Amino acid sequence: MRAYSRFRDKLHSYFQWIIYHPGKKNDIVLPLVKILQIIT
Image 1: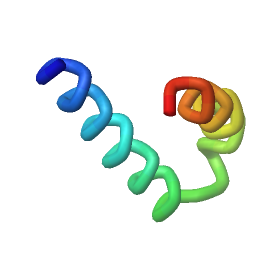
Image 2 (image 1 turned 30 degrees about the vertical axis):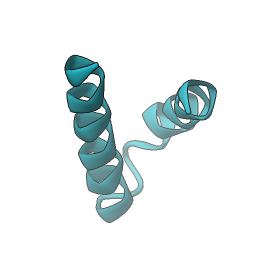
Image 3 (image 1 turned 45 degrees about the vertical axis):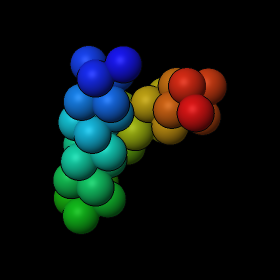
Image 4 (image 1 turned 90 degrees about the horizontal axis):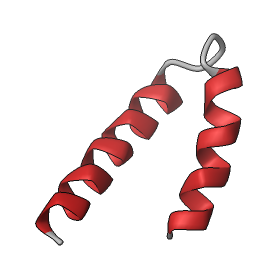
């Protein structure tokens, strides 16, 4: 469980980084958002 929460924290910080650096990452963001919706 601890590894999962650590993974989720990394994912969260990654999404925050993308939010603050929009544009180039759009092709990566959309599939990741769908994956995140499935996970949560």
